[in-house]
Length: 463
Image (cartoon, rainbow, N blue to C red; front, top):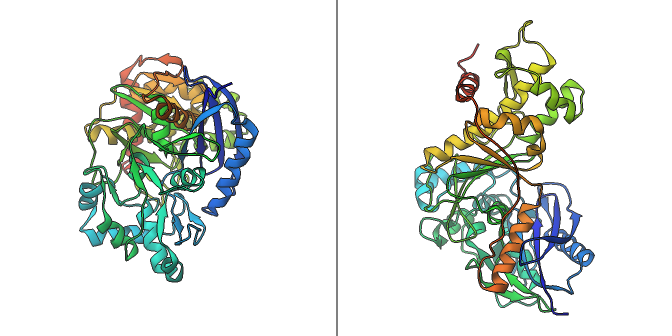
């Protein structure tokens, strides 16, 4: 039988997930998962071992094409023989925070960076990790010949003996040395970061076949994880995807690059040829877990408690910056409940304030997109936190937007499979994803009141 399926890979921070998908309608027919080592620096060969194991489990005899979406920003430095010169530094490694500040100053400020590449450097951005390596490990830096991102490296390895490495514009836009403004690499910024030039992957087009595996599978360009999820979901005009995982992201497709000098909105590209303005919060679903833990209940009972309180939790507010925060940029901030009195000190109010505080943090991200001229008329919820009944119920009132909860799915891997089908068939598939439930805004005053009180706490006006 001729191969009839495609495979999509999500090589995330925690694990490799592989979906085997029917390219005609996007139905998942098989899947597998392999864990990754913990930590903020990892030998990239561990990702390869996980990918090989997951592919072996699902089988590829009936697979015709494969695509890889990977965690963004990770720095994979290779020598002249294509071997890693050190463990990859991941997006969540913060040791390069001082280097981010130095790079901002050297180019003339945050606005100069936003106008140059669309994004202001923070510790997650690849360019800052290059600067850290050249400064802290000069002997390692001296051996480096090329730099790739995690998905680039895996795509390159899949091809066996490729002529050259490739990336895509979605993942390249998170490096700090590829510009969404010009659509080209900025070798001057790479040299500013590293002290000299490095070989970088060619940026492939969205539907391109960039190579073949030794057993004949077509390989698509691949992309970064957020661009992969966006490719799977395909948000329409004015639809904003809100991913409520351990951390949170708010993103959508856009028809032009954004250049936010505040640094709140990362001006990424997408995997279709457009743009993907995105904000990230450090605190999302984990906030719900902390609230449930404080109350000593399971998530189902936590939801019941939160839904048993009135909007605004009788004046009790949670500032959800449990591990500092990225949006707004407050790395040393702490979470706190504000406004606790004998009158409102109930389990229900504490649960409600926890959910509302987490949602207000994500609503700040929606506001940041709006400030960049990105329309937001509807929110699409994904991620583990979206399975909370309290979150799904309260989100429209806090966000002030109609909300649709999407069906549970490995959206990053599904986006990679969609891209593989695109490369195989020569055109993007017309799949759609299931939208489980829809909730409209029933009282616009709730968002105004809850968010005003939250803003007073966030900005230090509340007593």
